[in-house]
Amino acid sequence: MDLAEFSPQKVCFFDSGIGGLNLLYESALRLPEAELYYFADNFNVPYGNLPDEELEKAVDEIFSEIAKINPTVAVIACNTVTARCAERLRSKYDFPIVGIQPAVKEAVRAGGKCVVFATPATAKSASLNKLIKEYGNDLTQVVACPKFAQFVEQNIFNLNEEELMKLLPDLKADTVVLGCTHYIFVKETVQKKYGCPVFTGVDGTVRRILKLLGVENKQQIVPFSPKITFVGGDEQKNKRVFYDVLCR
Ligand code: DGL
Image 1 (cartoon, helix red, strand yellow):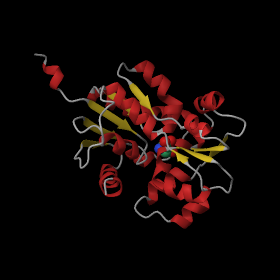
Image 2 (image 1 turned 135 degrees about the vertical axis):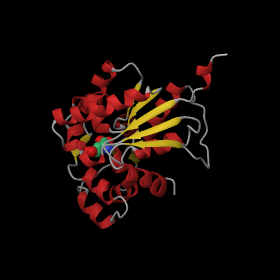
Image 3 (image 1 turned 45 degrees about the horizontal axis):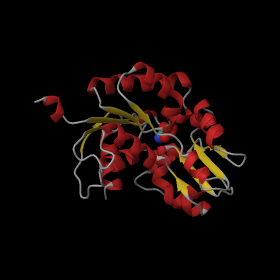
Image 4 (image 1 turned 30 degrees about the vertical axis):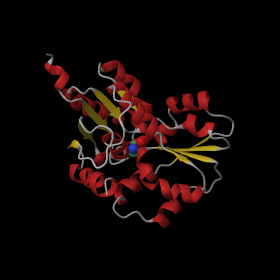
């Protein structure tokens, strides 16, 4: 009998700060037997405003820690890091790396004018431009939001809808894509402001993770008590956001 069959699958998630907890939560619901790790770097948020070199250095340090876990799958729960570093990381490591990306394809398919909100780094990335060339159309618009991720990171326990509304640009949209995992915490406010469907990219990313782990037919488990280790950044805060904001 092969003992390796009984060793738990290890999945490492990584975001600059709290944003990726949304993806961790949706994945954890379907992975009751896996060992989950959440790597973060909260004191360096916002990644989306960092120069390329600094971003790459921060990401490389964290990925070298992730590699020590020897993950079954690593998940970049950050659109900015996927856009800027995923290709390089995939060529460096031999474990599978899944990266969340703006859900342009899904949103454009729903019809009308699609507006993609993203961090400045994602907004100007070749990877988002490629995605839009492939799946977007003449009506697809990208809007860089330099202040939004940090606002959510800093105010997560006390989000003020009026202030949030002020940070959101006045524009018309038929669909909105949240191209940063931090924005998912304020999805309802975005929906209220623009009065249209809002896409996050979480569902598609969770499907890819489950497929790689060979458990794509797993149903959501409720209630659940996931085995999660929080590593790096503000571990206490990430834990609190996970259990008090998302699992509540
Ligand atoms: N959560 C990250 C993303 O999805 C970015 C937040 C940041 O700028 O640090 O892009």
